[in-house]
Image (tube, rainbow, N blue to C red; front, side):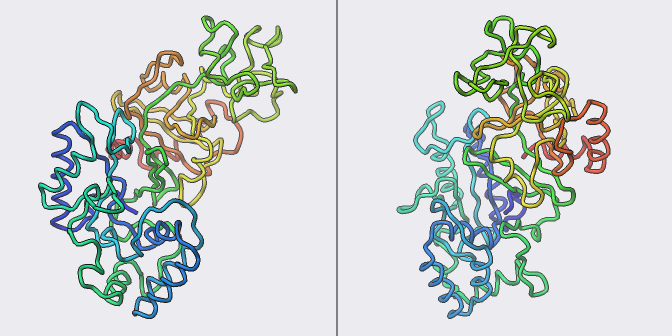
Length: 426
């Protein structure tokens, strides 16, 4: 799938640019999540809420009506589970024709999906639909059934079939557009429309919570733009019974019976450091990533947030960020502050809550010119770009010298700060 407005057809491309500008003028920021969508991605969305009986019937119908390419697409993506996203078969959505766009309403740097919530008296999707109508576009919020608030399309006719095209004609167009040398592009069931754009960046993951992750197609890496919350985990003075003398509040380490940020004994009781440790009386704070051959009962086994620039990724979700090589704990990358223009190498050292993205260590925040106080620092706007090179780590923590030596050539080969700046609008 693509998020590039340039992948839309004319004159829809210009109309979309006007639509987003008109929304912005009314204080509403709408962020594109999909423009051109491949038949494979459409098939995934369609199959995930369909029974095997429905799927077989659709495949048989398409073949009977001369649409063998689209029938093979449906079969190629395999079994899918999930909520209903679309009722359109592959090829029968205007997304495959470059004539539709989906956007979310951004509020305070986060995706807002409510069609009734108002900010300053306005609901983003209502404004989006109103401005679309003024431009002669068709907004999904206005549909009588199966309302689709993020969706806007160029034509008022529901889909290509309704416009008078036969399945054989739709199939021929899709085959010409999305096949190479007559062979199906099925190396991935979530193919991006790379054939439509030379830009080596594609949307690879949209979370249930609204944030998006992009994947570069020339170098194995993922990029996302987010806020920065501050993580103290791994620091010897991260947590104490007395919050006043600790770097962070104990409530951020967990709760009785569940202390994910602390080392505990067999009974689940947090371990306090003794005279052999750097901060006697403080709890031993842990990170997911550890140093090899270190005693995991002691602070030196963990990545110190005050000394090492590291980033945190959301549990479960980070493994889905890439369509190719998965991200692993210990992989390395770069963080770039779009406002201060400061850059820092970093390592993936901790796994955080599944619903949040955009968190870094005290040392990473300080390196980027951000207040690194876990209790009062960080930034809430999406001013930080995060870059992760998949498969770049060794599965264990590194010294700062090792981290720098590992990241420097990867970042330079990737394109460095100039390329990071180019992705500031994602």
